[in-house]
Length: 247
Image (cartoon, rainbow, N blue to C red; front, side):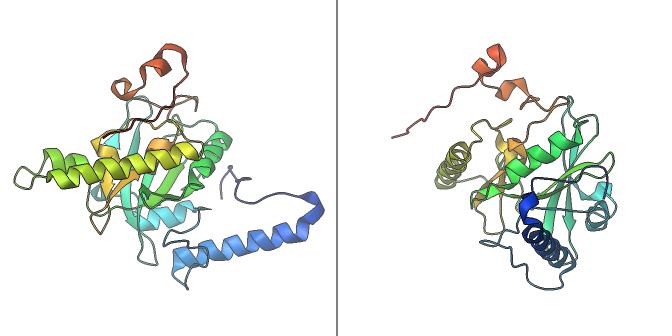
């Protein structure tokens, strides 16, 4: 791999090197099985693979060398990035978010941020399942949601409107996702909008995990779209966490 080996996927205890080595070997086997399709991934929990490091070769193969035909999202003037759909050798679909090095010049900071978000696991999230930090490459890997975004259903399918019951379901499911993220130490979500709400193969709404990543050159700013930034965060860099109850 490149210059950004992660220290957050395994614990390092000098007094217990043998245990650490066994853990690293098991994680490597888990990831190899998940990518190659050689067998079931024993680290899969509730259908979601454990968070792991992907090689650049894996992701190039999955996305057909990052073909423009596989682009599903393109955004970000301050921190330009693209999202590709891809398919691993085990036939599992993934979403790959590709940053420029300019967006994340500090490789260690990128890996630490990805590992933090990668610990989250919830049925209402499009969960982050891995990353790649190889040379100048900065990539995130998440579950792929096949039924597109809320924005497309709201604004681009004029003859197929969303019923009010589903709109309410979207609101409650996303509130559940945000509540979980807040309880797990991620109270601030970046650019919450209709493009961040995705629908899985069963038609259930999920919140994109990509919005939980800090997204800037210095790794300190969460938002590139000021329209969705909390006012108090714009004023002084702090944010207020509160619960809103709807009756």
